Image (cartoon, rainbow, N blue to C red; front, side):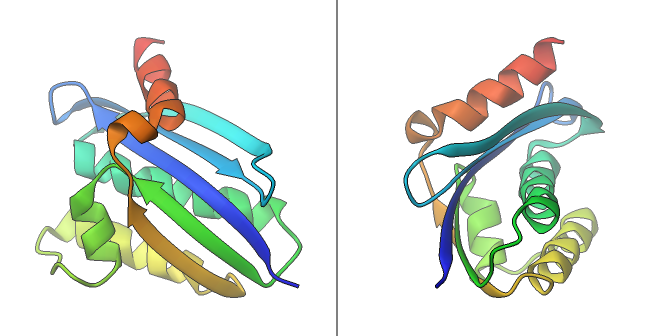
Amino acid sequence: MAKNLYVFTDGGAKGNPGPAAIGFVVKDNFGKTLVREGKSIGFATNNIAEYRAVIGALRWILTSIKEQPLTINFYLDSTLVVNQLNGLFKIKNKNLKNLAVEVKRLEGKINGKIFYHYNPRKKNKESHFLVASALVR
């Protein structure tokens, strides 16, 4: 039986580029929070931080979730990153292209299906709060 995960991610930078942080929340089928993580990632752009949040969540899933196959629904407030990961937008920036390759590499290690959805910031409050908190530290 496939396990469903719902992953809410966000990334941000003060100054763009500037001090940056990521946040992600992973929930199970029943809405139970499995992990909440927010951390500083140094100096980056908003888009790099958005990608790094997805990568952080995928790495957590790979090391923490043993039950597979999985159906993973990611929710991001970055239309650019959602459309790039869904193959709708070409990735022109070299740094973002490298991060997208890393996302696809990690996806390949997961037995299941992964979907990326746009989620407005007002519905992505928990992961956004984790980013804001990490930027304050």
